[in-house]
Image: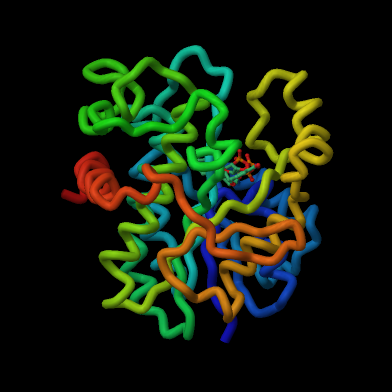
Length: 315
Ligand code: NDP
């Protein structure tokens, strides 16, 4: 049978390119989990991917009710879950003030981390039930949360501190809107959320891999300087960032190429190792990359997991 993969945020950028790459093989049915149905429908059509190989289902990660609703709808659809890809993200580098999810969590961490945390915790049961030969849970990471790289050292750097803001609910009222309890900074909130994504993937690996055989992985797909992720940046940045990445850092990767990379992590029979953070070198071959000290801190991963459980109502 075809594999069934759920991809969050498949209405643009990396998620869309991955959906296309997988749907075109004819071996996958892609569930595009998107907040804007019409946009997703148009995007899917525009890529020309075969209609019978994808379904769009509504999911707004900035609402925990919506996450639970999505899980119910997915179960009712009768599809098996073979691979889950947590890809969606928001990035607000120029925001002066925080904005918030339906439950009142700062938007970047609330969407990128907490929404995906609840989604993957609920769907782990569905993954367990699948009879697919290689079941996977993939959480898209980023180099910007990795302070052991050049790009990860561009200020403001990711830093979760002692999680005091997260523990108090990131609501900007009783607590700071930042995980470490500091002043709001949209670019840092995004990087912090990506560190949470990478810590969560490893904690999943430690708690579930042996028992379930599920492969847990994260990746840095390369700098896809043309996606909607940078939509809120200042116009000059948006003009200069793609050529800068192309010619100066040479980290630039096209949306199509990044989609092929993520599709590999979904389906390549040789990428079954669990607990791994994949990257690609200049010849586009994959390798296991190192994470920064904070992004591989076992104790912090456990704390993020436990605090997040409370915030999303699982504990
Ligand atoms: P895009 O902005 O193009 O895509 C992000 C997707 O997330 C969109 O489909 C968007 O939906 C969706 N999304 C945002 N908020 C929500 C929400 N509340 N509920 C459901 N979906 C939501 O960015 P990219 O493709 O670049 O980003 C994809 C992933 O790649 C992210 O995890 C990002 O961190 C990562 N990444 C990107 C890099 C890059 O250089 N671009 C580098 C490293 C990692 P909508 O279309 O409705 O806005």
